[in-house]
Image (cartoon, rainbow, N blue to C red; front, top):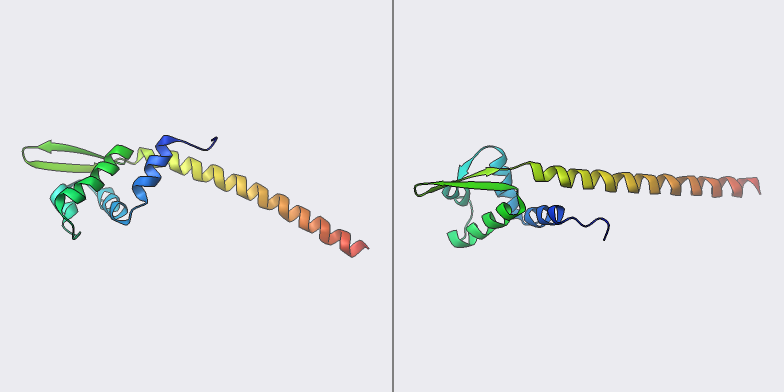
Length: 114
């Protein structure tokens, strides 16, 4: 598949879940502990940690442990791969729509000339 990229696939998977999107949005505001990140969600901590693992495996987050406290930080670099892919898709579809518009315009002009 020409448009397949594991990096993009992992980022899309990670951000495909509303809980992970909310956590990532919070991390974009600054580092936070796991406890602080988990507080707004009504789920068991082990379930929440699974969400953090998905974010970390996608490269969107990193964590460090100091004593008993684990602090998480957002990593924005993986978004650049996704941004490029979206821009490429936009260019493809804009070109296709321009070609379609030219075709319809030519058909319309041909109908008028008859």
